[in-house]
Amino acid sequence: MSVKQLSIFLENRPGRLVTVAKVLGDAGVSILALSVADTKDFGILRLIVDDVAKADEALHGQGILCQISDVTAVEIGSAPGSLAFVLELFTKSGVNVEYMYAIAEPCSTHPVMVFRFDQPKAALEALAAAGIHVCTDAEVLSHGQRA
Amino acid sequence: MNDLLLKDFVERGALERLQYERLRETLERVYNNVPFYRKSFDEAGVKPSDLKTLKDLSKFPFTNKTDLRDNYPFGLLAVPQKDIVRIHASSGTTGKPTVVCYTRHDLECWAETMCRTFQLGGATENDIFQVGYGYGLFTGGLGAHYGAERLGASVIPMGGGATEKQIMLIRDFGTTVFCGTPSYFIHLIEEAEKLGVDLKETKLRLGFFGAEPWTEAMRDLIESRTNIKAHDIFGLSEIMGPGVSADCIYHEGLHVFEDHYYPEIIDPETGELLPPGEEGEICFTNITKEGMPMIRYRTHDISRLHYERCRCGRTIVRMEKVRRRSDDMLIIHGVNLFPTQVESVLLGIPGTSPHYQLVVSRPKAMDELEIRVEVTPEAFSDQVRGLEVLRAQIASRIKQLIGLSARITLVEPGTIERSIGKAKRVIDLRNQK
Image 1 (cartoon, rainbow over the protein chains, first blue to last red):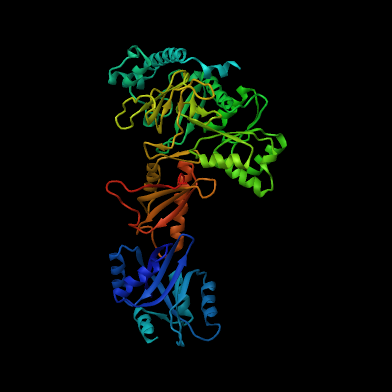
Image 2 (image 1 turned 45 degrees about the vertical axis):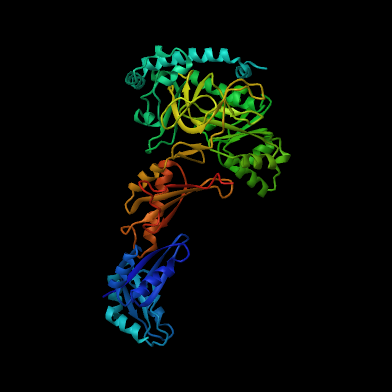
């Protein structure tokens, strides 16, 4: 089970992030979660949006380099130690987290984290065995709208 | 005045008679021994005997860098292989180096003209030379080395790099003359200052700098921060190496050792010979070289020739310092680079596009090359690693094939300016004052 993530190449110069945000805004796309990976010379903006196809089309139309990939959205408890508990599952099954970020939802009792794993299948198995809920696209979307 | 020095002060009539004899003999020799020249002379409908005066050389066809590449490695030899005693090579245009071969006689001529180069600046057998040019396939190190030995000086074959050690030897050995690229020497000055070494308190008095273009501002910088009088050496390996020409204490152009290297100025568009004093592309013809003589070799360097006697009294012709070229070749750290070389490297790496731009700058003393490459959808993913690997791969291929360390910047597709026909490939920020 996975959700769609949009990755966007950003050159390291002023105004690039604004351009992307405007293109998405003009297309009527809502951003549910984001993270930026940056190096000295370039960055990669990763987004979970309410309409991936529409966002992809709008960005392509502006000549902005983007790509869709699969990530896993995992529901994590809000009690202290919940994140550590989930991460430990991955460690035990030999799965590496390549990157992760949270879906913005300040008041939720079930925060959702987005993960990119080196072995998604093994990660899902570990989560299922521990009885941890993995969200679908629709769930992520409704989650975001509730917030 | 020694015998070698006299050659720079010869009466022009006598010089031209000597040049004519040597040129005529060279044309005969290449026509008889090198199939490439026989074919090109035949195609142009000229024979060596058509050379009645020096000016008649303009009837003969040019030789280009591509001819060396097409005849790689030894196709242009004018002597049997057994007579070759040294082989040098410089970076070529397609990954294959440009090869040059020398007989024993050629090495003697080269040492002679390098020796005369050093004499132009006033170096003598009492000097201690530190050669900071790279040794190896590059002609700089060994060229300067044999020239300084021919002069009778003491030579330290230091080679490039190892700056702290260079500084130590300058102090401990009492080096009086430094040879190297000007940008490296400025780097050395800065390193010395960091180490708290005042080069003005050393015995350094002369510097011979070349293998890359440099400005009057760099000369001022070197001369103000050391007690060095900085001289400019011009040369190219195809003709011999360093020491084709060099400037004297007046710095009013570089004296061409024209009893070995016969210069002409041509219109780079039409190839027509231009009268003395006019600006155009400088071509050289080897008139004493045995191994691999070049006939009307096109340098693509724009210059002018001045035949009036110099204030130093020398009669040999002076060429103006080269400030631009008629093609898009760049010289970075003494390495020749054509933008098309970068293009062919990029074409060989999946995930890159042929849209690129070279930015050459000199933020401090050293040249820096930045290559901007557009990212393609194939190379792009959600992972940083993929692009980092791509960058490292481009950098290592450039280093391997061209011999330059470049900083690779990935840019968004469509952001490199595409002018009609040809993109603006090169931004050279070095010579802006």
